[in-house]
Length: 165
Ligand code: ZN
Image 1: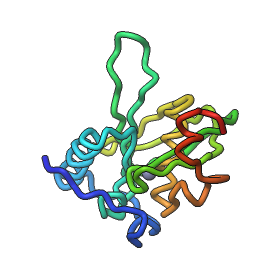
Image 2 (image 1 turned 90 degrees about the horizontal axis):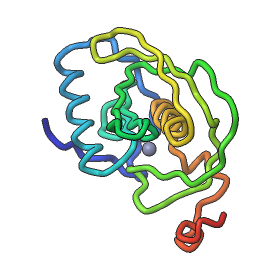
Image 3 (image 1 turned 90 degrees about the vertical axis):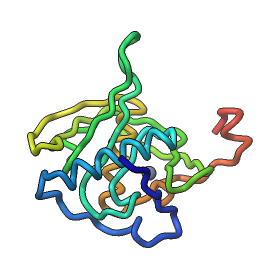
């Protein structure tokens, strides 16, 4: 495995539409393993392939709200799509490609997604709260959408620290 460079918001590759993954081969597995290592090293909760310069529809989402005693699960989603969403949450959102900046972004409270795993098998996954936010954020990356374009406004450090926004 190897760490990959994370593109930052100045780089045009972040704003491009990504193509579907069609080959579930060792090259894809290498990409996913590298993304996992890169995400863990950066202490993030999600990462999309275009963030490491690969314009393919693959993302990782760390499922953080697991029952007590269970460890967090990292979900690999290939060619993901949102099947259902409900509710609403409005809160701070950030991105490894936009380090140090946070914005107020509205997202659904609950989403259900469908995706393929690294071997091409279809599965469904559901998420609430931060995990729902993360599914939406990462799938946005596949359309070349960065959260700053969805933010009602960006937050100052004071606002973030006080939790009042
Ligand atoms: Zn992001």
